[in-house]
Length: 205
Image 1 (tube, rainbow, N blue to C red):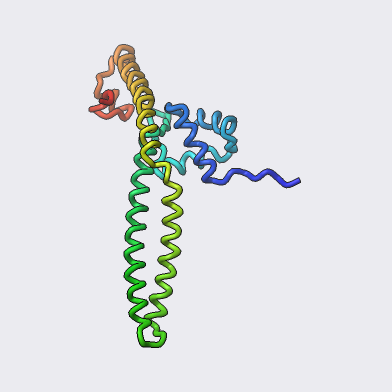
Image 2: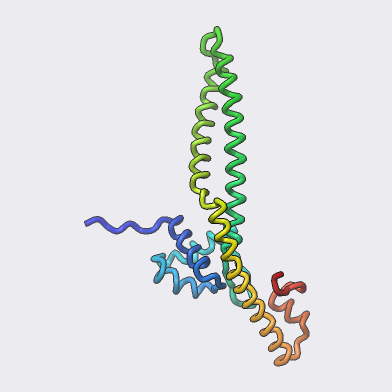
């Protein structure tokens, strides 16, 4: 009997993003370490590395408050990231098609009434490389089809829930600041500096 294949890194990353999108909440590392193995089948030893890889790729946001680090990723940000990536791929695809057309014209011109030359051979090799690049870009475009209008509209709806989650955490921050003022007689600037809270921190419009 063959062994069960483990999850690839991309599968782990995708499943971990599902945790954030489904919960639409903010987590600490210890929360993710409890949820990921149980609900998504991600091995406990790899949770931290997978999470940090998502942070490094700007797919998950991270903020340190005091001695604790918090992580979150809302669908709206993922939508904009995919939309930007799709636009970049579309642009590259268009540029590649133009280069391919130019090279094809040059190759046809080189064929007319002459034997194979070093220049023609070089152009043919570059043309082949561009065809392969075009195929890769086409594959990338296919993978980003989820950025169609219907999916984007659905993500816009999920922004409402994401905004509510942000508002809850904003409430929590103001509550903690209020408690610290009463308990320790700290002024607001000192609290903001201690916890890394921006001076213009406020509710989202």
